[in-house]
Length: 234
Image (tube, rainbow, N blue to C red):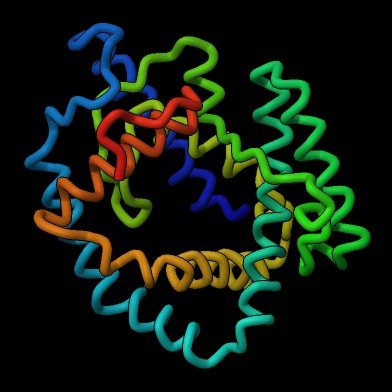
C-alpha cells in the first residue's frame, strides 16, 4: 500500500474513532437508528448520488449490457469468494465456530474446485454463505452503533460500521497486491460489478431517496446483527 493511502487510512481510522467516542459520550448506549447529523448526511448523500448518476451508474449499465451473464456471474462469484476470507475471520472473532468453519469450507471448495472462485461450487453442494464483517464483530463485542453516517464515496453506515470498514479493508487480499495498477483495477472492477448487480433495485426506491436508503440500510444491518427481521421491513 502506498504511503499516501496509508496516511489517508490512518486519518480516517482516527476520525471514526473520535466520532465513536463523541457519539457514545453524547448519546449513551442506545444508538441504533438516530440520525442527528441529517443535514450533513444529506449534503454528502447529494454528492454521492450525483457521482452515481453521472459516473458510476452509466458505467455499470454499460458493463451490464456488454458482458454476457455467465461472465458477470463468474466475476461476482470471484469477489464473493474473496469475501469469505472476511467472513471467516469475523466469525472467528465473534466465536461463531459453525459460521467460521462454513465460510472457510466455502473458500477452500470454491478456490480449488471452483477455479479460484469463478464457480460457486460450495452453494451447489449446500454450503451457503454466512456474511460477517467487523462492524458486526464490534456489535457482538458490545460496541454501540452510534448515529447514522453517510460516508463520502462509500455510502451509508453508522459510526460503528464505518469504524469497522478499516479492519476489513486491511484484512482484504487486495492490499497484499504490490502492483498498484492491478490492485486498483481489481477494486474498480469490484465496485462496478457491485453497482451493476444493484441496477434493478433502483426501481424499488420510492419517495425521499435519502430516507428510503437510510431506513433500508439500518433495517438490513439490524437483521444481519440480530438475525431477526424488522417489524417494518422493506
